[in-house]
Each structure stands twice: as C-alpha cells, then as structure tokens.
Length: 140
Image 1 (tube, rainbow, N blue to C red):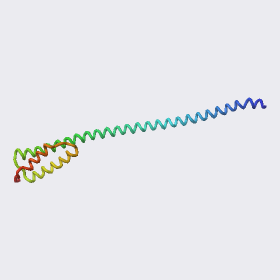
Image 2: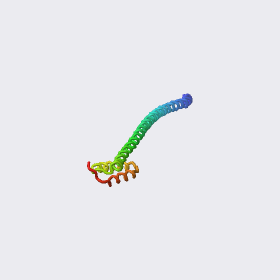
Image 3: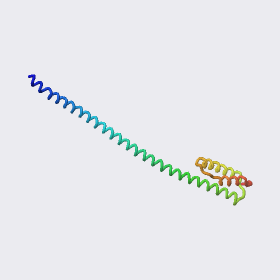
C-alpha cells in the first residue's frame, strides 16, 4: 500500500497543481478579457468625445468666421455712412445744424469705440468729423 501511495502521490500532486494552474489561468484570462472590454469601451468613448469636440470646434470656427464677416460689413457700412454725411456737410452744404453735428458726433463716438475694440485705425474719419464740427451752424 505504501508503494501505491508513493506512486500515486506525485501523480495526484501533479493533477492538483495542473488543475489549480488551469483555474488560475482561466481566472486571469477572464480578468484580461474584462480589462480589454473596458479598454475598448474607454477608447470608443474617447473617440466619440473627440468627434464631438471636433464638431463643436468646427461649428465655433464657422460662427467666428461669419461673425468676423458681419463685423467687417458693419464697420464698412458705418464708415460709409459717416463719410457720406461728412462730404454732404462739407462739400454740398458747407454747414451743419447743431442736431446734425450731435447725431454725427454720437455715431462717430460709437464707431470709434467699435474700432478701438477691434483694433481698426480710423484717422481719416476722425479728421472728417472734426472738420464737420468746425463748420458754421445752419438752421434746420
């Protein structure tokens, strides 16, 4: 009997160790699979977020471009209006009423703030308005 136990002990030990190793390997494989699935989910989420951010950035760039064109158009229109009024008072009438001067001064003040905010140089407009302010008064 001792001989059988002596012969069986290493075999049983090997079987037990092999079964335990297989169980541990299966557990590690499951854990690695779960980790891989989580990693894949995280990568998919990151990709979705990156696409979303890219879309938002593109829309903001588009809005910024449209806003820039709109501001440029507004500045151009206001400058044209001021120039037109100044040339009318300076060249055509040679005078301007107090009300006209006040309205022009207010428009010029707002246009100057607008230009300061955007870094636009408008010296020729400043000079035209100053010349109009020096004109003699006309009655309305």
